Length: 293
Image 1 (cartoon, rainbow, N blue to C red):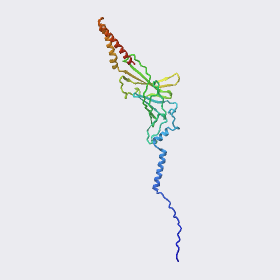
Image 2: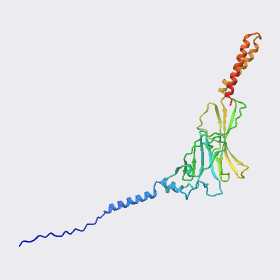
Image 3: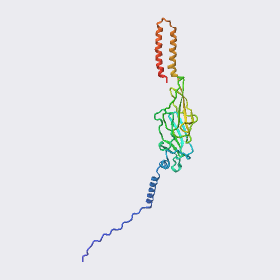
Protein backbone atom coordinates (compact mmCIF):
# COMPACT_ATOMS: atom_id res chain seq x y z
CA UNK A 1 0.00 0.00 0.00
CA UNK A 2 1.11 3.52 -0.83
CA UNK A 3 1.72 5.77 2.24
CA UNK A 4 0.50 9.37 1.90
CA UNK A 5 2.97 12.07 2.90
CA UNK A 6 0.98 14.80 4.61
CA UNK A 7 2.87 18.06 5.34
CA UNK A 8 3.69 18.69 8.93
CA UNK A 9 2.30 21.86 10.50
CA UNK A 10 4.87 24.68 10.96
CA UNK A 11 5.54 25.43 14.57
CA UNK A 12 7.73 28.57 15.01
CA UNK A 13 10.65 28.22 17.35
CA UNK A 14 10.63 30.44 20.42
CA UNK A 15 12.67 33.68 19.97
CA UNK A 16 15.85 33.76 21.96
CA UNK A 17 16.10 36.75 24.35
CA UNK A 18 18.81 39.34 23.54
CA UNK A 19 21.34 39.68 26.30
CA UNK A 20 23.80 42.64 26.82
CA UNK A 21 27.29 41.90 27.95
CA UNK A 22 28.34 43.32 31.34
CA UNK A 23 31.10 45.48 29.76
CA UNK A 24 28.70 47.14 27.32
CA UNK A 25 26.19 47.74 30.07
CA UNK A 26 28.83 49.42 32.26
CA UNK A 27 29.94 51.65 29.36
CA UNK A 28 26.37 52.78 28.68
CA UNK A 29 25.83 53.57 32.35
CA UNK A 30 29.01 55.66 32.52
CA UNK A 31 28.12 57.52 29.31
CA UNK A 32 24.64 58.32 30.58
CA UNK A 33 26.06 59.51 33.90
CA UNK A 34 28.57 61.76 32.13
CA UNK A 35 25.84 63.29 29.96
CA UNK A 36 23.66 63.97 32.99
CA UNK A 37 26.59 65.50 34.89
CA UNK A 38 27.66 67.73 32.00
CA UNK A 39 24.11 68.95 31.46
CA UNK A 40 23.72 69.77 35.15
CA UNK A 41 27.20 71.15 35.77
CA UNK A 42 28.45 72.81 32.57
CA UNK A 43 31.59 74.96 32.34
CA UNK A 44 32.84 76.31 35.64
CA UNK A 45 32.67 79.97 34.63
CA UNK A 46 29.12 79.57 33.34
CA UNK A 47 27.99 77.97 36.60
CA UNK A 48 29.77 80.66 38.58
CA UNK A 49 28.21 83.51 36.59
CA UNK A 50 24.76 81.98 36.94
CA UNK A 51 25.30 81.62 40.68
CA UNK A 52 26.65 85.14 41.26
CA UNK A 53 24.37 87.11 38.94
CA UNK A 54 21.08 85.31 39.52
CA UNK A 55 18.09 87.48 40.36
CA UNK A 56 17.85 85.95 43.83
CA UNK A 57 21.50 86.58 44.77
CA UNK A 58 22.40 89.90 43.11
CA UNK A 59 20.80 93.29 42.53
CA UNK A 60 22.67 96.01 40.66
CA UNK A 61 20.91 98.70 42.72
CA UNK A 62 22.11 97.25 46.04
CA UNK A 63 25.23 98.77 47.56
CA UNK A 64 27.56 95.74 48.05
CA UNK A 65 28.34 95.89 51.78
CA UNK A 66 27.88 93.35 54.56
CA UNK A 67 26.63 96.01 56.98
CA UNK A 68 24.36 98.81 55.79
CA UNK A 69 25.96 101.28 58.21
CA UNK A 70 29.42 100.81 56.68
CA UNK A 71 30.83 103.04 53.94
CA UNK A 72 32.03 101.24 50.82
CA UNK A 73 35.65 102.17 50.11
CA UNK A 74 36.43 102.99 46.47
CA UNK A 75 40.04 103.70 45.44
CA UNK A 76 40.31 106.13 42.55
CA UNK A 77 43.32 106.84 40.34
CA UNK A 78 44.07 108.54 37.05
CA UNK A 79 46.69 107.85 34.38
CA UNK A 80 47.41 110.76 32.05
CA UNK A 81 46.79 108.71 28.95
CA UNK A 82 43.00 108.80 28.97
CA UNK A 83 42.62 106.00 31.52
CA UNK A 84 40.73 105.94 34.82
CA UNK A 85 41.49 103.37 37.50
CA UNK A 86 38.63 102.50 39.89
CA UNK A 87 38.84 99.71 42.49
CA UNK A 88 36.33 98.51 45.08
CA UNK A 89 35.24 95.33 46.88
CA UNK A 90 31.85 93.77 46.16
CA UNK A 91 30.61 91.71 49.10
CA UNK A 92 28.14 89.82 46.90
CA UNK A 93 30.70 88.69 44.31
CA UNK A 94 32.77 86.28 46.39
CA UNK A 95 33.24 82.58 45.80
CA UNK A 96 35.40 79.63 46.76
CA UNK A 97 37.63 78.97 43.76
CA UNK A 98 37.99 75.28 44.63
CA UNK A 99 34.26 74.77 44.07
CA UNK A 100 34.40 76.20 40.55
CA UNK A 101 37.35 74.44 38.97
CA UNK A 102 39.98 76.92 40.21
CA UNK A 103 38.38 79.99 38.55
CA UNK A 104 40.09 82.98 40.22
CA UNK A 105 38.65 85.93 38.27
CA UNK A 106 35.90 86.87 35.83
CA UNK A 107 35.29 89.60 33.25
CA UNK A 108 31.77 90.96 33.62
CA UNK A 109 29.93 93.68 31.70
CA UNK A 110 29.57 96.75 33.98
CA UNK A 111 25.80 96.92 33.39
CA UNK A 112 25.30 93.54 35.09
CA UNK A 113 26.91 94.44 38.44
CA UNK A 114 26.92 97.35 40.86
CA UNK A 115 29.34 100.10 39.90
CA UNK A 116 30.12 103.39 41.70
CA UNK A 117 28.57 106.33 39.86
CA UNK A 118 31.79 108.37 39.82
CA UNK A 119 31.62 111.26 37.34
CA UNK A 120 33.61 114.40 36.64
CA UNK A 121 31.80 117.32 38.26
CA UNK A 122 33.30 120.06 36.08
CA UNK A 123 32.82 118.25 32.77
CA UNK A 124 32.45 120.37 29.63
CA UNK A 125 31.42 117.43 27.43
CA UNK A 126 27.82 117.18 26.27
CA UNK A 127 27.86 113.45 26.99
CA UNK A 128 29.11 114.16 30.54
CA UNK A 129 30.65 110.68 30.86
CA UNK A 130 33.48 110.42 28.36
CA UNK A 131 34.60 106.89 29.22
CA UNK A 132 34.36 103.73 27.13
CA UNK A 133 32.69 101.03 29.23
CA UNK A 134 35.00 98.02 29.35
CA UNK A 135 34.56 94.82 31.36
CA UNK A 136 35.02 94.78 35.13
CA UNK A 137 37.64 92.32 36.40
CA UNK A 138 36.12 90.55 39.43
CA UNK A 139 38.36 88.37 41.62
CA UNK A 140 37.30 85.54 43.91
CA UNK A 141 37.73 87.68 47.05
CA UNK A 142 35.20 90.23 45.75
CA UNK A 143 37.72 92.87 44.65
CA UNK A 144 36.67 94.64 41.45
CA UNK A 145 38.92 96.51 39.00
CA UNK A 146 37.41 98.89 36.45
CA UNK A 147 39.83 100.61 34.05
CA UNK A 148 37.83 102.44 31.35
CA UNK A 149 39.69 104.58 28.80
CA UNK A 150 38.21 107.95 27.99
CA UNK A 151 38.69 111.51 26.76
CA UNK A 152 37.72 114.16 29.30
CA UNK A 153 36.86 117.80 28.64
CA UNK A 154 36.77 119.99 31.72
CA UNK A 155 36.20 123.65 32.41
CA UNK A 156 39.42 125.48 33.24
CA UNK A 157 40.11 129.07 34.28
CA UNK A 158 42.92 130.47 32.10
CA UNK A 159 45.22 133.25 33.35
CA UNK A 160 47.23 134.88 30.52
CA UNK A 161 48.65 137.78 32.52
CA UNK A 162 52.23 136.69 31.84
CA UNK A 163 51.70 135.30 28.32
CA UNK A 164 53.78 133.70 26.81
CA UNK A 165 55.62 133.00 30.11
CA UNK A 166 52.51 131.66 31.84
CA UNK A 167 51.68 128.59 33.93
CA UNK A 168 48.20 127.09 33.91
CA UNK A 169 46.46 124.95 36.53
CA UNK A 170 43.44 122.94 35.39
CA UNK A 171 41.39 120.87 37.83
CA UNK A 172 39.53 117.62 37.18
CA UNK A 173 37.06 116.95 39.98
CA UNK A 174 35.68 113.40 40.34
CA UNK A 175 33.10 112.20 42.81
CA UNK A 176 29.99 110.10 43.32
CA UNK A 177 26.82 111.71 42.00
CA UNK A 178 24.34 110.17 44.46
CA UNK A 179 26.23 108.46 47.32
CA UNK A 180 27.35 110.60 50.25
CA UNK A 181 30.49 110.12 52.31
CA UNK A 182 28.72 107.87 54.82
CA UNK A 183 27.85 105.38 52.06
CA UNK A 184 30.82 105.60 49.70
CA UNK A 185 34.31 106.52 50.88
CA UNK A 186 36.29 107.70 47.85
CA UNK A 187 40.03 107.31 48.47
CA UNK A 188 42.96 108.60 46.43
CA UNK A 189 44.82 105.57 45.10
CA UNK A 190 48.26 107.24 45.09
CA UNK A 191 49.36 110.09 47.33
CA UNK A 192 51.52 111.48 44.52
CA UNK A 193 48.44 112.03 42.36
CA UNK A 194 48.12 110.82 38.78
CA UNK A 195 50.37 108.36 36.99
CA UNK A 196 52.60 110.13 34.43
CA UNK A 197 54.68 107.14 33.31
CA UNK A 198 52.84 106.81 29.98
CA UNK A 199 52.47 110.52 29.25
CA UNK A 200 53.43 111.65 25.73
CA UNK A 201 55.13 115.05 25.64
CA UNK A 202 53.42 117.99 23.97
CA UNK A 203 55.06 120.46 21.61
CA UNK A 204 53.43 123.52 23.17
CA UNK A 205 53.29 122.72 26.89
CA UNK A 206 55.52 121.30 29.63
CA UNK A 207 53.77 119.04 32.14
CA UNK A 208 54.95 120.07 35.61
CA UNK A 209 52.86 117.58 37.58
CA UNK A 210 49.41 116.25 38.38
CA UNK A 211 48.91 116.16 42.17
CA UNK A 212 45.71 114.76 43.64
CA UNK A 213 43.73 115.73 46.71
CA UNK A 214 40.77 114.28 48.58
CA UNK A 215 38.10 116.81 49.59
CA UNK A 216 35.12 116.48 51.92
CA UNK A 217 32.42 118.97 50.96
CA UNK A 218 29.11 119.99 52.55
CA UNK A 219 26.48 121.43 50.24
CA UNK A 220 23.47 123.58 51.08
CA UNK A 221 21.04 121.00 49.70
CA UNK A 222 22.12 118.08 51.85
CA UNK A 223 23.41 117.71 55.42
CA UNK A 224 25.60 114.69 54.58
CA UNK A 225 29.26 115.16 53.58
CA UNK A 226 30.21 114.42 49.98
CA UNK A 227 33.69 113.24 49.01
CA UNK A 228 35.51 114.09 45.79
CA UNK A 229 39.00 113.52 44.41
CA UNK A 230 40.51 116.47 42.53
CA UNK A 231 43.50 116.20 40.19
CA UNK A 232 45.29 119.44 39.27
CA UNK A 233 47.10 119.39 35.93
CA UNK A 234 50.02 121.85 36.12
CA UNK A 235 51.41 122.92 32.73
CA UNK A 236 53.86 125.57 31.52
CA UNK A 237 53.91 127.07 28.04
CA UNK A 238 56.95 126.53 25.82
CA UNK A 239 58.20 130.04 25.03
CA UNK A 240 60.76 129.42 22.26
CA UNK A 241 58.20 129.66 19.44
CA UNK A 242 56.62 132.82 20.80
CA UNK A 243 60.04 134.35 21.50
CA UNK A 244 61.09 134.24 17.83
CA UNK A 245 57.65 134.99 16.38
CA UNK A 246 56.40 137.68 18.78
CA UNK A 247 59.09 139.14 21.00
CA UNK A 248 61.92 139.45 18.44
CA UNK A 249 59.71 141.13 15.74
CA UNK A 250 58.31 143.50 18.36
CA UNK A 251 61.82 144.56 19.44
CA UNK A 252 62.98 145.05 15.83
CA UNK A 253 59.97 147.17 14.89
CA UNK A 254 60.41 149.33 17.99
CA UNK A 255 64.13 149.79 17.19
CA UNK A 256 63.33 150.86 13.62
CA UNK A 257 60.84 153.41 14.94
CA UNK A 258 63.54 154.91 17.16
CA UNK A 259 66.02 155.00 14.26
CA UNK A 260 63.54 157.09 12.27
CA UNK A 261 64.13 160.02 14.60
CA UNK A 262 67.82 160.09 13.67
CA UNK A 263 67.09 160.91 10.02
CA UNK A 264 66.96 164.57 8.86
CA UNK A 265 63.46 166.10 8.77
CA UNK A 266 63.69 166.95 5.04
CA UNK A 267 64.82 163.43 4.10
CA UNK A 268 62.44 161.41 1.91
CA UNK A 269 63.63 158.15 3.39
CA UNK A 270 62.19 159.20 6.75
CA UNK A 271 58.64 159.16 5.34
CA UNK A 272 59.25 155.82 3.62
CA UNK A 273 60.61 154.33 6.84
CA UNK A 274 57.65 155.62 8.85
CA UNK A 275 55.11 154.11 6.43
CA UNK A 276 57.01 150.81 6.41
CA UNK A 277 57.04 150.70 10.21
CA UNK A 278 53.29 151.46 10.32
CA UNK A 279 52.46 148.65 7.89
CA UNK A 280 54.75 146.23 9.73
CA UNK A 281 53.12 147.15 13.02
CA UNK A 282 49.65 146.53 11.54
CA UNK A 283 50.61 143.09 10.23
CA UNK A 284 52.26 142.25 13.56
CA UNK A 285 49.14 143.23 15.54
CA UNK A 286 46.96 141.06 13.29
CA UNK A 287 49.32 138.15 13.85
CA UNK A 288 49.35 138.80 17.59
CA UNK A 289 45.54 138.75 17.73
CA UNK A 290 45.53 135.30 16.12
CA UNK A 291 48.15 133.85 18.47
CA UNK A 292 46.84 135.20 21.78
CA UNK A 293 44.64 132.66 23.64
